Length: 574
Image (tube, rainbow, N blue to C red; front, side, top):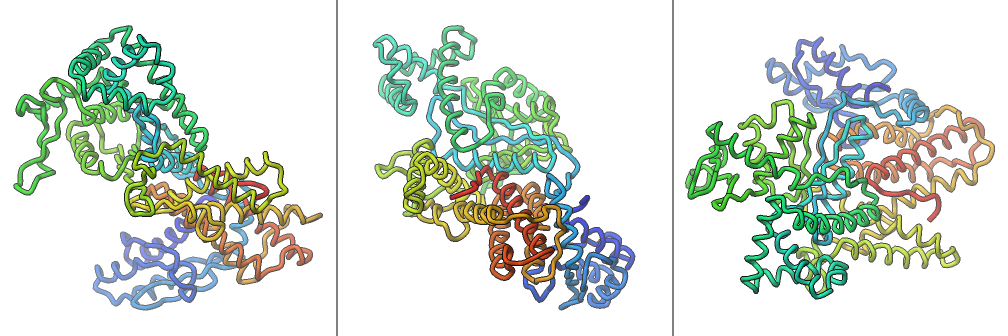
């Protein structure tokens, strides 16, 4: 298949609109909201009619007369003020299913390839990853997986916090505790080590001065301080890699390009902004005043690129990163998967990057923001004592809770197998609970909801997959190359949903919304259950049995692929 369903229908309706004298009118194809409206609606007629000062239904009639959907649609009707309802032909949908079954990519076409930079996860090193890093990490990973599947070249960028005052503080404290023989113990718990160093920094002026001196030494290339800094980085990255492996996230050391990578370019960025008349001195700092962003008094907002003391900010580092991604990586699109609370920063940074010429018009810059994870009390998710929840601890608890559920369901199963299932179910539940929500929204973290085997959850979808696989363990001697033939309405509805997989992936990639894929998979699982209840599979015979098994096969393949694109493992048994 060279086109998705939306692309095919869009092209045909556009051609009909053009033939009816509306060459620039959009087709606006979308799935119909209710069964009586058919499978798809074309909603571009009314706008075109208004532009031509025509009656919308009269134009719709003319468009339908010129609409060539032979072999595609079994029925085309005009509804309301000018909607065109399209019902797809069962033989056409069967053909799409057969093509998908014969294709390792399930019939998903490859769009024009882009080079896409995906900036995600980005923890601060020398501290353990906490729940605040979960959303960026798994949303970014899911988007990278979908984009790669569609054929785009994805360059992951883990923009870690590995520079600045905190590393002078940590280095000074490391030297101090090493002299007391405590370093190995202290570094076993990075969070505790950081907390103790911060306490020393806040309470001891002499220590704070020494810490700032180490920052200067680090920035100046001092070998000893640099070696200690690298030690923190190695320990921190090893911790991150353990979390990524447990989450099934594909970030590696090769993807790490932290703040320190841009350090040498920061003076050049400021000098360039000055030369272009964008950065000016204000109260000793170098500031760009952006007319596009004004406060309540109508004053242009200040975007500081160099502090009074000559230091740089992450605003400067992000500009240097844009220069690198455009000039060295030659990206066509750059996604920044970062907390929605940074929205204004990215709006300003993107605006300045354009004005300074760092981001050409051909480079798409997009902030993929997300909301906050909340506890069941509606407040930011914390430990019972009010502390930050370590991500490793959260994942450990997810597996533990899943193991208890799996053991209760399968008490006679070998422990090793139960633990393997618990790992897939527990980690999958945490990831899916997040990815299934609109990323722009805050969401409530609930163990009971996410681990439920009913509703829009990972366990439900994983179980749906295992149920389909169990059908094949009981099926013997069937034709695995038989064509799909649709005769029952439930078969047709399942085939229609399967045919929408490619469009769903396109929507996820274009809108950067992983929850579109979650909603699709949940709907697909529901359509399969209705098909399975209405259409006997193993008890049917001959060509009907083989055709229905092929529909089961395509459903299982689509569920496995879709969950895999979310970074969620499927199992043969649960």
